[in-house]
Figure 1: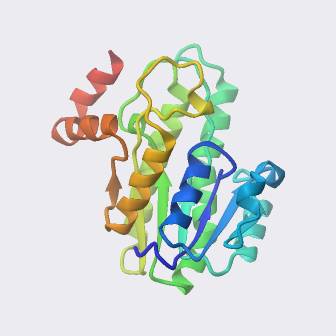
Figure 2: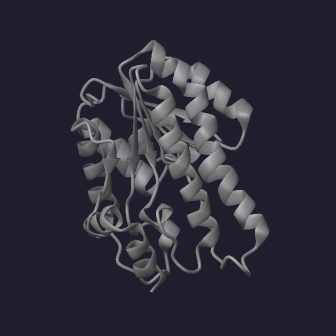
Figure 3: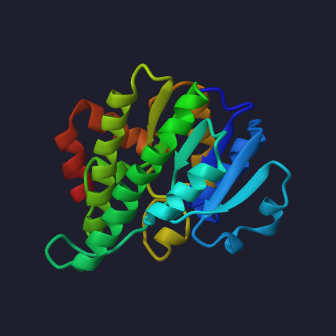
Length: 239
């Protein structure tokens, strides 16, 4: 997928990794970037004032909001599904409302946006869908059962999209970062990559034509374990 000259849309782009992805896409020559967030007023003014940026409201859990965004952005060639939430808790004692919330955002929201934009991407082909997943979509860690399950479901959706869109001029790419130093993991003691580094490697991977991207050192190492023996990664992350 050619990033230079692309027209991108990034969900959940008002802060954290999403904001870094916007900056990296612009740095690599994207001609326009739709910056979306549930509350567009929370997009930094330095971003919203960039002439290559269009700010749109988008709630990935609301079909009418998704449909409105797809109508407002008919020229997109690169969709980046980044929006997500994280609920803490174990598989036996975690709040079931958080399980439902995480699944509705991280899996169903990703699918909802992808479905809405596939006709747009097909009309503007060649194009790509980039799903920002996580290493722990492939094997869970303790205390994040809802998040891990929702991202595992999103990983499966990514594989299904790749199969169903084959031959239609739309690449489907999965990015699997480890921990990232953003507000989402504030207070969690773990190795964390800089969001700028993760964004840079994701966009570089897209430009290089990779279908699977390990965008930080921790995920690259763990990814090699997974590719050799998936159960070994499960044991490793379970501690």
